[in-house]
Length: 432
Image (tube, rainbow, N blue to C red; front, side, top):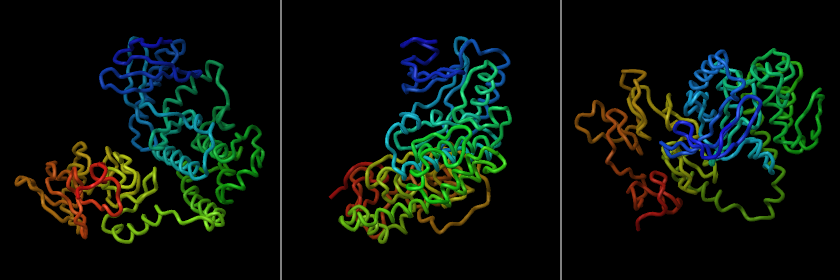
């Protein structure tokens, strides 16, 4: 369809990444923003006015979804007669990743992320229709994002009408045109089975499929029951939607991790205790409560808090918070917590918000005042970068109670006896 270095609006085509029965995907350079993107372009012979109307409707649905595990649309427009959808460019697909060996912990992490993304879509009454590893994109921080939400519905209908397409991860009733949330559940169950065993169950989906012994050796019986229920040929016996399946998964996951630790205990007795875990434990005892380090870094598993903009143990950037928040709301940009009466995000200088409540809420976490004399309220919590009331940058150099050390770059509190990187600015080391 396109040649390398061909210009398509503001995009310069670099190479083709994939091609299916409905569309081709290209890697391209956004010559205005200077970033690489993935462009999805439907095949010209399938495009007509009816398809474009359906496509626009589904793109609008997909554009409304805001979740860490759903790949957001960057742009959708008609360029030189081609309908083009642009997405952020990831490192590779889950399909590519499953070609290599994968630990049970990694598989559990990917499973939870894909279930969370589909559960969010189902809660908004959107069925994906084409859940498969090729539609799950992995990024550098091991973040999994599902793509083609909504768009898959148009693709499926168009490809089926053209007489092409394969079953793949499609539920039996979906192949006969009876689509529901349970169809997405079936596809998720097939992916889970393949991740843990390396085998993809096939029709007639008799239980147990090939590779079942490997599944028994790896995961807890409750997780096996979850997968079996998800890939039941009879849709009435499956989970009603991905939200119900996610709840069952979150109950089974800790049991699988506990079984893994029990199996590895004899080997651990023959080795010395991991010094990193000892250091993490000592840090949590001394400072974990006051710094609210309730989360773990995805890269090194060190304790972090939602106010930290970098991991103090390995230096990984945390532009987006990954754990749960203790606040009632979350910033749409950085996913950190916000209170109902704040007008701005104090952590990332994100866009302004209409406060949910005009009432003033007290909070014992307020410990300082904004330097702006015109600020309408001025209460600040530790480690805020910007005032949530007037958006002025906070000049205060936040300290850590009980510690005199400071970062050489930002002068904020730094625990040099524990940390290698400053969690507030990401710089390595401290001042003497």
